[in-house]
Amino acid sequence: MECKYKIEGEPLPDMPWQERPAGSNEVLWRYSANPIIGRHALSTSNSIFNSAVVPFRKGEYNYAGVFRCDDTNRRMRIHVGFSVDGLKWDIREEDFRLTGADAEVGEWVYGYDPRVAKIGDKYYVTWCNGYHGPTIGVAWTEDFETFHQQENAFLPYNRNGVLFPRKINGNFAMLSRPSDTGHTAFGDIFYSESPDMEFWGRHRHVMSPAPFEVSAWQCMKIGAGPVPIETSEGWLLFYHGVLRSCNGYVYAFGSALLDREQPWKVTARSGPYLISPRELYECTGDVPNVTFPCAALHDPATGRIAVYYGCADTVTGVAFGYIPEIIDFTKKNSIL
Ligand code: BMA
Image (cartoon, rainbow, N blue to C red; front, side, top):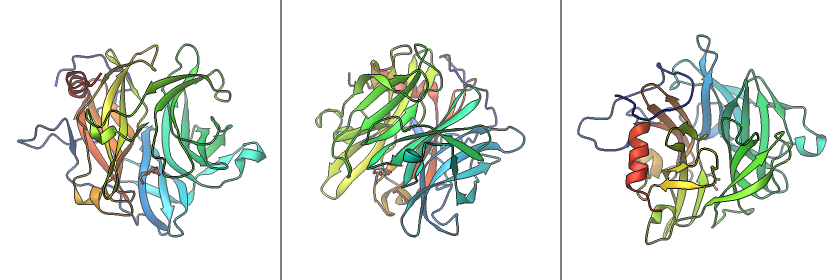
């Protein structure tokens, strides 16, 4: 397919891919062999989901990732994994190794829902880090062996901390979602900047949940998903939205476009979702009816994208699409 928009990022011609099924008009379609990671991929795992992958050391592994692996004590842990094709993953049995943090913040309590952003030569992991409640933990690595822990980015309570892949206005930039200690029944996305990855400020509001009568899947709370992708049309952001049904929360996801230099300004936002729980592996599991995107791989030349998402807080799935089509879908169906 010809790519009508300019898309930033490293070439990834061999990325995981499967064509849209014949007869389908879906903008994002599920991989036919989902889920790609089952709940018992580790000897100690209860579930593996809401995880993040990036291209890493082409020719040796090709891809690396950090995986949310809840163990059979139901403790939330993060493990490193490697893959040759981005679909079959070799996840390490041991937890990821954090080092160098100030003793006050370095004490591990729990960690979940990691994201990874490559900025310059370093891979920065952000995750929901237990410190008197959930907040945003930050660590960088160059080798996916040793992770150098920084200060937590924000005060508790916060979740869904997602870095931009380059500095903006000369500063590191992050989206996040202030929350509470529980299963937060509210939530807007905010934007913050930092000169040094330690002190965060210039907080700006990005977007709130949508009105119920406009777009119900995102009417209770929203949170940023994968690292935003820079395009000539703005930053393409996938984000999850939550609807409260009579049987509990339902997590779907959609897309938005953010201004390139002022990313707190939303220029388009999809009313219809891209993916909502529908398949058995999304609707049954430890938390039914959850599709929760945390990472994406893309190839700028072809516009292909593979979105990695947690399914029912139990297993990991992937969905494919074309970035230009997703941009057009977002603009055409914008609720702004
Ligand atoms: C959120 C987070 C996610 C999870 C979702 C659904 O608050 O805990 O990790 O996928 O709830 O349980």
